[in-house]
Image (tube, rainbow, N blue to C red; front, side, top):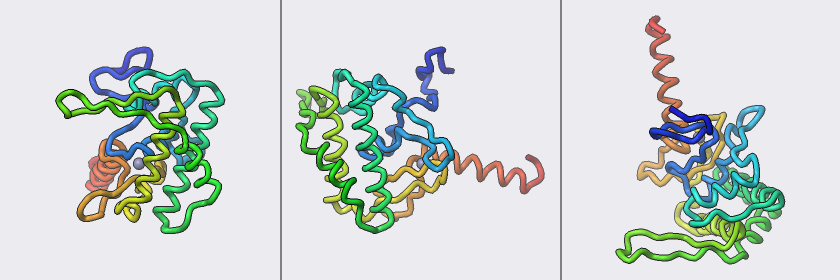
Length: 201
Ligand SMILES: [Zn+2]
């Protein structure tokens, strides 16, 4: 269903498409490096243009910012700091001080500004550049640390994935970063295992 450019058509996604399902902004950003548990992870921020696209697709700004290689390097530094802080939160241990410094530095930049729609049902974010977007991402992690959900950070149950998520379910039994990706994959694997056990697969 995908066309030559790898753009999604008919709702079908490619591996390079960014994932925002069920993800908090900060951990959605961490998920731009996929397959963290594999020997060779999959990089969705392959170039500065990908970072620019993420800024818009995440809803953090309406206008694609110009991104340089230096912006991309800074974004990845922030992303990995967020990943490690998420892992520390999931493990219930203090995060590394260098990672906290990286997150605080990003959050200190002015964030995108919100604009409420006339019907007060939606919001658009306006940022002047990639710094404003990265600031929003960093501030989202900080807000999480300051919220009742700070003890609800988990690492996805798919060992290939490894992305943190926030379990907001009442039962606190969510296992996957997203039911649309890792959860669906686990269901499919369980189904195939049942078929094999039945001798039909
Ligand atoms: Zn996952």
